[in-house]
Length: 217
Ligand code: ADP
Ligand code: MG
Image (cartoon, rainbow, N blue to C red; front, side, top):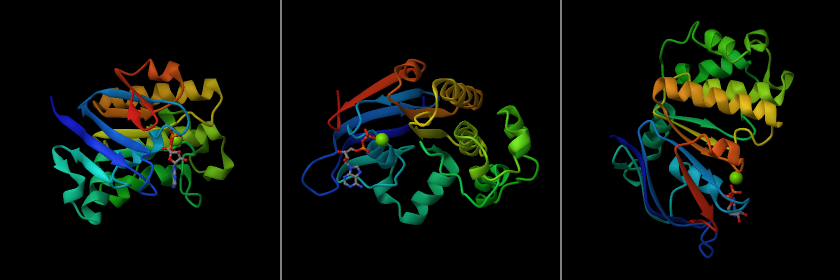
């Protein structure tokens, strides 16, 4: 079994006093679905940013495929993120000046991979074919989140990291987004790490890590 992500005694503080993440260790195996749960302020988003190399730990190591992010430079971390990760945030964070289709094509274009004709079938599958040429501001929150899911999986990353991907949606739209995330990642054998406070969503994962005050509880 390939270990995709390995956190070893990871701690982080914003102000060098209070640890927001404290001594967190766990491994995520290839193909695993892991939920990170915990109350608001427990450090879930910070942990996800540490895992993705967006933040650097104050101490401890974050390893991807056995390689420490600390040993990479900014360009190498960015390249790893682009090729091997798909990120979904609560507010979708699609580029506002690009259509949904163009947003989904973006990872492929940045990776200099074939992109023409790839986005539409995926958007169709997510029920977005009729709004593919609209800007993010011209569609609903649920449609934006589904487009964000498409963008996160379009390039076949090894792992999708999602931070409260359903947090801004009503329960029906949220369930659809989660179902699609689960279907698309399991078809591709993609590892999934999802931050959520929705226990129904966490229950669909293989492993649940509970954070309390920045520690694994
Ligand atoms: P969660 O996602 O579980 O709600 P976060 O990781 O966002 O938790 O935040 C954990 C703690 O870190 C909170 O106490 C929060 O106020 C603090 N925090 C988050 N972001 C920052 C920041 N940019 N600067 C200072 N403190 C922050
Ligand atoms: Mg959060």
